[in-house]
Image 1: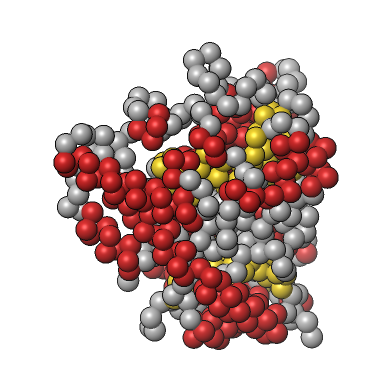
Image 2: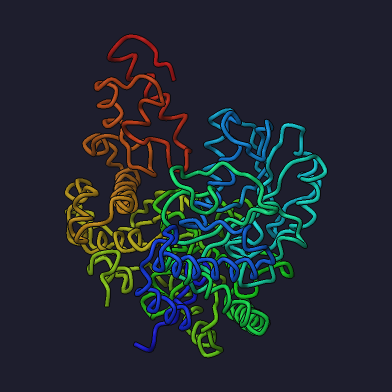
Length: 394
Length: 204
């Protein structure tokens, strides 16, 4: 079999070679950044340098970056501010308990939001249009005086649609609510700017930007006081307890630096490859829906739905020829519901189960796309020939 | 090569499915059974040719819309039933199918469960079309929830074990947690069975 092709970069990315180098180097640096001696200070210096690099990727100040164990933890931290009792901290959210978010967030936001609702918090899930964008008028209408926090992802992981974050943040601020955006998928792919976008909180993850798993960051603008989710230590200026994951943090810093160096040239290259792939699919396969926004979208993400075939079957047939993609299909996740994102778009159900996400990355080549376009059409044709839900046209 | 998510047998039947209905005329078959639906993400149609003298399956073709295990299990089933009497074929259980496949992950069991359902529907269809309705009775308990393969007998068992409300029934049997289409029917069956055994109507 030829070299396998990885087209699932929105799930996770391979380590950047420079990040690998830094990780190996860091294996020798074992000091606890909280220690005052030489060993500790060396670790501290490196963590602080990484903080500055991560901050630079999103135009934040270094002290605004709080390292966490994942993007999910960062998102949980922000949303959990709403259930602060305000008795023991100077938490920034005051007494407003309401949350407004969207129906297409990552499960770590959706599930935390549902948990808040079970605790009695007013929670609104905004729907999206056929291209995956929220309606700003619907957001405005949802912004009642009880809303303390608005959380809207910058770019969607499954379909790549990018929201108008500045406009949404301004609406939130107009009524005195704070604004959070989960930029895990956007950062390192498109320019992200916490200052220009006027956001209060922003979430990042290292393993989506060619860094390691197990480290993320929450950017807290203006160094606002927040309740930590993890208690029991002074680390991260009291905002996240636990001895720092020094190797992971330093690797994330390098990953962020490399993104800043590579992103500008890479984005148009990936967009062109993605457009070629989309064109090739539409020209060679009938009964296909392309999901997402034609313009406001991540450069390397393509989500397509095929009528009458099921996503996991497509994924595994592609895997058998050495091509890795992902599916939000029910069968792959073990539930019976197709992806909440694809359903929120209003994709007809006979298409929705047959959705796959193809996400390109820095090592994706034109040859990879060509091979995908050779392999995919016969796979879809074969599965449709088996399918009871695809009517062959005479 | 790393281990596949399914057994080698599943992989083989998935990548090289046997007995798929392709160019044949569906009308040339003696019976058809359909189960599942597109909403659930799994749908299967089984076509049978039957020797009318001996009531033995001489050919079984199929079409399946679904994931790897759904495709593999229908393919396996089509091989299992050839040469089998209708009576024996009707006794094939989901367990028979996934043993033949070398096992399935837990969350995939419902897919293979559809195979035996489609087959059973085809057998029922044959009996009806050929004036053999008297044999339907012998086929055993009727399936209520086709997504999760919950039969009337399963519901009765749950009721006898203490389920009274529809929620309690769902906790025990998962009935109606797939596409949800059978929920009304399941509530009726529950009420009837609660009435039958305890003389009171269910809280469903």
